[in-house]
Length: 338
Image (cartoon, rainbow, N blue to C red; front, side):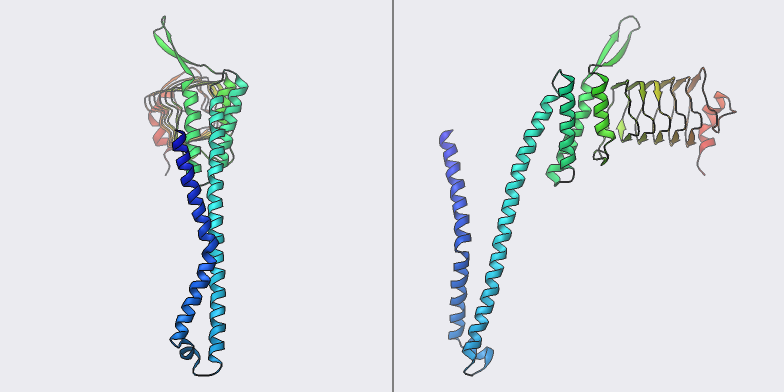
């Protein structure tokens, strides 16, 4: 191994030496080559061809040669400088990538800690790397997608499934405190630059309990079979999200903007959609209990085959004076945009 290292080190030094040799003697080669060319052309009476058969022809020819040579040397100098700048940039990029890799490794390691403060530090450190590299080259931008997937996977992997032997059903809980899950949701969906907006987030089979997150922007998120419990998402935007078979209990969605959302087969209870906008949303086969849609806006919303129980609130909506059966069967036609 030591021989191999020395061999590669020798090759690297040789290559660098050759590069320095080329730059060192390039001006000399250019001058000598140009003088040789000028003398050769002079022997073929180029001065006479250019300036005629006069006593000043030689002087004018020499002046022209010197002028062209000066321009050539300037061009060579600019080319060499450009090469040096490119090489320095390449070296800087290599050093920066190595530094980012080290920071990335350290931050990812913190996620495996049992200490909450360490986990939070890891989350923010990874997000900071994603923010810094989001405006970089294609290689650097790759960190954004990787970090996004890691944080989403962290939530999924820290959701435990408990089997209830008595009732014969499974129940899911978080292994991590709510502050950890809330922090991840915060960096993913409330950052000002929205660097993760174009990425599809898989947050299925998760548990969001006691989450307080307002004015977030959820785009292209898979929330299927996820539990939302005693949480707040006021004035948030949900666009093109999948919430099929979700469990939604005591959640505040007031003032939210829902666009192209699928709630099919979900259980929704003691939840408010007051002052929310629901556009192109499907609530097929949902079970809803004590849900408030007071003053909500509806556009192309369908409650096909849903079940409404207890105190459903449709005050100040087009459904105010309709029976539950009428809303379930006629909602789509009543809210269809013309």
